[in-house]
Length: 415
Image 1 (spheres, rainbow, N blue to C red):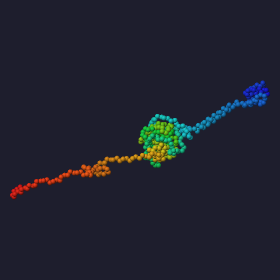
Image 2 (image 1 turned 90 degrees about the horizontal axis):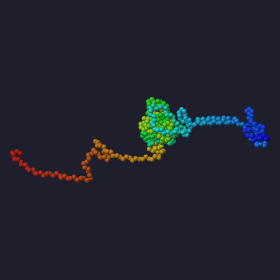
Image 3 (image 1 turned 135 degrees about the vertical axis):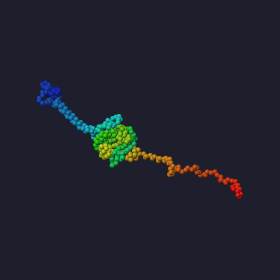
Image 4 (image 1 turned 180 degrees about the vertical axis):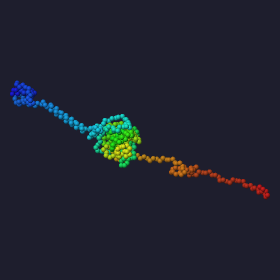
């Protein structure tokens, strides 16, 4: 018991690693094969109560490393799975694909200096690189519900409205149709973005973004063969981020580039007349890639230019632009807003301007209030009071001397 008490005063390391020898000294443990033993102190005696020695854990650090490695592999697998469901860039088209486009970061805005678009007749056939596009909603939004639009030109005049006209190249219900809104202020003013969005095309290579239904390769070949690229208008196409795209045609030059984000009212180019236009103006049109209706192209244009046979149907821009009372077509199209317009000011009828009497002719037609010039003018104007006329004395017979009797000759005398 004394030895046990002395052993209780020894270190725990001594108790675990060896046995008690003579004199109460701890002796080193001798390894015996692969088994390991632990010393258990007696639970009774005069010495202090001994604690039970813990098992030897020499191999646990290796197990811990294995567990940590397994956890690391699991985290890597989870991270890879998360990356697969994040927005990814399609390698073939460069279009950003995402389930929630409203939270996508937009391309950084740049402000390049104004420069004319490429006017080389040998422009490359490959369109501009596809930019980051805003994904469109899965449901087509009615045009009447669209908001956030501004006029592309300040104080512009409508020169050709949307709808049937002999000037149109599209065919709708058997009639020629103008698929956009022509507005003008003169050559040179800035063209503004009508809505927030991302630029899809800026220049003469825009047809891949305007909703043609068909193959454009024959048309591109025709332009190259005849060197007609300079006849193509300079156009800006912007994805408005609401399921619609805005098209601005006939600019003289552009100030944006594909992939650039713009806000409503930002300058995107300058008003011009490129593309064989008859005068400076902006052809503004609006359409949705989700639209299923189409507008047919004039068969003569298809045969001549090898164009696709149809395009996605357009929307009248006057349905979405801010209402203006001085645009007659808009007043007729949106009568619920026209009710608040002030009544038109009635102009007084023009005063009749006296005209010069026609020259006298052989057959004069009398005109009220005009004196006939063919009648001879009287020498004196008649008056109510007769003008006294000096009396002329009646002629009195002149006193002639009495005739003197002539002597009659005598008979036989000659006179």
